[in-house]
Amino acid sequence: MLANRSLLLLALRRALHPGLGAAALVLAGALLLFGNGTSGLEVGAENASHIERALARQAMWTALTLLVAPVLAIGAARVVGRWRAGEAAWLAARAAPPRVTLTSTWLGLLAGAAVASLGVALAAEAGAGTDSTPRALRAAGVLRANPCETPAGGAAVRWLSPAPDPFAPGSRARLSLDLWAQSGPAAQVTLSVERADGGGRAVVERRLARAAILEIDLPPGEGELVFTLERVGEGASVVLERPELILLVPAASERLASVELACRLLLALACWTALGLGFGAWMSAPGAVLVLAGAQALVWLAADPSQLWLPAVDLGAALSWVGEGVVPPALAPAAWLGSVAWVALGLGVARLGLARGGGAV
Image 1 (cartoon, helix red, strand yellow):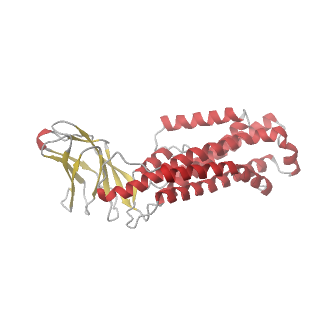
Image 2 (spheres, helix red, strand yellow):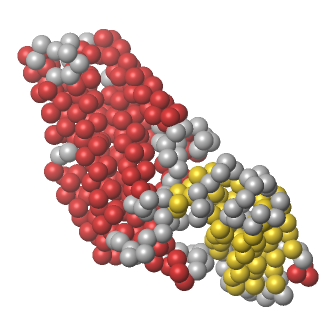
Image 3 (cartoon, rainbow, N blue to C red):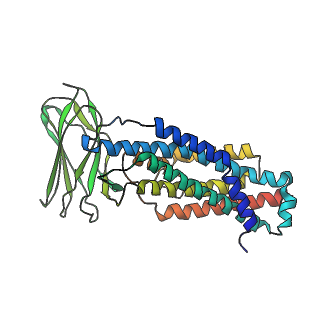
């Protein structure tokens, strides 16, 4: 027997107590009424509604995640304290060994996390609304480039990027541009991309008055991609803000953004609840929550988002993608395997703490 039904249902009920649901509903309602944001970037008139929906989705996910995640983590950290404070007799009546008690409790918390993640996803999509002409793109990689600035006199800047593996028609490259005021506050910009072997060419022309996101279709063919950035006439200096261009490929729906965020939130909560059980077996619930929060903050501040084996390391990056109207990359196997390892570690630490402290199970 791997789980005890009564213990699992008890943990599920405690994870989804009415106060959490009421607070989430109030917050979601406030965001739906007052949460309309605006972007500080130029994205083109044809993309305005797309970005508005993306910002609404990002705001809903950010706010509800900040509400749901701490509540579930605190609940997990309090579990062992409840056992030691008087639930030992009730647990003993279930005749479940310690490993079954821990596993059942964690599975109940995980079920609560799954319900919460689904609720956040539904609330976010309700807040984002729908579009009659959907245009969905998924981040699929990076095309390297060097940071550069358009020189005075209208000269063009060119750079080569290695061609990725064959990509679907409709794939694009995304650039983040900034302006430095020189002979004017705005600039007329021409961006082009072609294959080194002359297989195809695409051009985008825009007048920019502030920081902007530019997307350009990638031409079919083979060989390296040759990008050209040119300021036409006088005006502000145009700067390639990031040393990389993002490869975007077509996605089935922009709602996949919430699916990707829900998967990340669920994995994060799986780790946080298991580690909360572990820390809570060795210290008080407030101390366990502080340790868990501090460790996660260090991960976000110091870790490379590519280190997907760390809990929730790319959750912030995924939220940023969503706010830019892009579906985050699909989770790599390392994220799933890393979560399994952290869950096993948390439950193992909890079992050792119970054996050391005695009393509960």
